[in-house]
Each structure stands twice: as C-alpha cells, then as structure tokens.
Image (cartoon, rainbow, N blue to C red):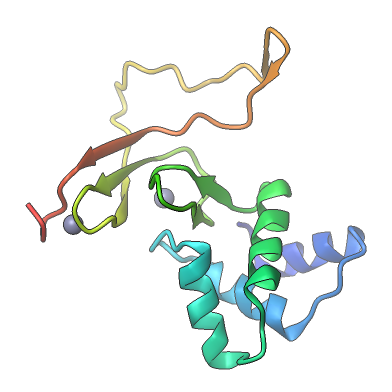
Length: 139
Ligand SMILES: [Zn+2]
Ligand SMILES: [Zn+2]
C-alpha cells in the first residue's frame, strides 16, 4: 500500500466514497506488518466504529486487493490474511498458533520470481512463497 492520500484518490476515481470507516481501515493497514485477517481488522475497527458491518470491512479489503494496494495471502487454510506490503517477500506460517511472519528471500534464491503475466491463457496475479513450521514461541 502506498500512502493513504493516493489510496483515497484511487477510491474517488473509482466512484467510491471515502467514509470515516474506510479511512480507519486504510490507517489500520498502513505500515501494518501483522498480516491481519478480515476478522482481525473488523475487531479493531469495531472499537472506533461500533456500527460497522463485517461486509463493509470485507468489501473494502477486496477493493484494495483488486487495486493492488494490498496482498491477499492464501497461507492459512482457514482464512485469508492481508498484507499492505506489496513488495516481493516470502512468509512464515506457524502450524501451532497460525501466526504469519515476514521472511526475507535469500538473494541467491533458486526461484526466478520474475513471473510471466500470462501463461497459456492463465493470467498470473501473484506467486506466493511461504514456509510452514513453528514460530519461536511454539517451537
Ligand atoms: Zn507459533
Ligand atoms: Zn508480509
């Protein structure tokens, strides 16, 4: 996610209103490295906007994802998590506490992450790399 101003601009260009609820979601995501799920974000926003619906939170996340402002991580088989860091990086996933962390890709990674945008009619949106194991607290 770039700066909040440009996200606001893109929402306006798409004809979407900037509500205080949406603004709170942008602020919560900006520079957030905790990889929250939609439920986590909903719980936080409820503290400030007690009448917000889960659907509003979810739809805002989908819009941000479609705009390429956040990544939707399909690491946890139970639910999607979101990452405003859209630079190429890998993740760790703890089998025990389900926590998602960032993992720097080694410079000599054998993977060529320069993806084709299209392959045999398949449109590539992202390649997600993650390591499964136990975090420092659970291991
Ligand atoms: Zn853990
Ligand atoms: Zn991340």
